[in-house]
Every structure is written in structure tokens, then in C-alpha cells.
Amino acid sequence: MKQFLVIGLGNFGFHLATHLYRKGHDVMAVDKSPVLVQSIKDHVTQAVVADATDAATLKELGVKNVDTAVVGIGSVLGDSILAVLNLQENGIPHIVAKAISDPHKKVLEKLGVENIIFPEKDTALSMARKLDNPSLIDYLPFMEGYGIIELAVPGKFVGKSLKQINLTNKYGVQVVAIKGPDAEHTRLSPKADHILNQEDLLILLGPEKGLDSLKTVSKK
Image (cartoon, rainbow, N blue to C red; front, side, top):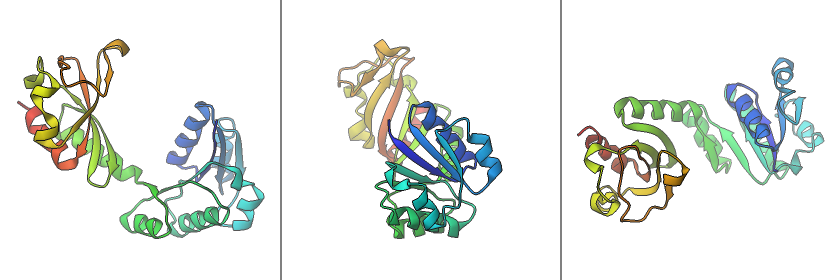
């Protein structure tokens, strides 16, 4: 069990905090709004009405003991920045921060925040990819210029081995796993001689350009 601090209880913060709590973790949820804190108090370990932009307040909450702090404040840029600075001053080892714009993201990077999430942008990009390619089941940004996708096996790949379709050499894409109809038929780091079935789903990691190239294959 880990200790998490979630600051900002909008839709993102609320769902993150409650999900972590359901996973068995110790979660402290913080927001300036009594209404938002009241709505989450029965779904986390501790819910507190507090202003994270006040360094003294955070210190009184004993936040230095948490493993990870998540700053979910997005609407007010200054509040997000101050919350991050206060967490850093309290010696939090791992800080995750939400960004709502590219300038916001750049400021967080300047502050040394390594784990920055862009929920609205990431969701929009994922949806755009799915609409553009019906065979795409899911998309997850991995790092700048790279992504992870879940792709239904294109018809022309059915009955062929991974060695035959040769995705690494053709597209620079690696097959991380193959999800079958059940756990027994699911393979992590599958071997080159694995034969693809129509019901399989490919979990692929690679550069955006290579992943996009698979769109044309999926339509054939």
C-alpha cells in the first residue's frame, strides 16, 4: 500500500483519488471547496478542506510522508505552480501534475516536474486516432513522439507469424503483447513464430509515424 496525496478534486482528481483508494492505497484528498471535499470523504482515506498554495498548511497536513503527490489543479495556473513549489519544499519524492495548456506544461517542466499529464489533450488525441482508424481499440501516449496502441489484427495478418509480418523492420514498431480471447491465449513478449488469429488484439509500442502507417494496412 502506498500513500497518495491528490490536490484538486475536479473530475480528474476525484476519479483518480477514488480509484487509487479502491485499489487499496492510502489516499488524502485536498481541495479548497468544502462541497467537493464532502462529496469524496466516504471514498478516500482522508478528505481535507485546505489551500495547497499555502506552504504552512501543507506542512501541517504532514504531506512529507506521502509517496506521490498529484496536483490536479488546472483552472488557475498560479495555484498549480504554487502547489508544486510547496510540495517540492516539503520534500515530496514524486510529483505528478496536470497541465491544461502547452504554456502550463512548459512552466511545470521548468519547475522540474517530470511526470506531467495532459488529460484533455490525451483523450482528444486518442479519440481522433480511433475515429481515423476503426481497427484501433485504444491509444496511450508513451513519451514524446511515441505511443502504445491496441489494434485489432488486420485481415492480411491473420494466419501469419510475427516474423512474417515483420513489424519491427517495416514500421519500427514492437509487439509488446498479444491479447487472445482469454488469459490462456494471451502472450507477453510473444515469440517470432506466434501465429496471429482473427480474434487477437495486438499491443504495439513504437514511434507515432510507424503506428500511423499501420492504419493503411488495417484498412486493407
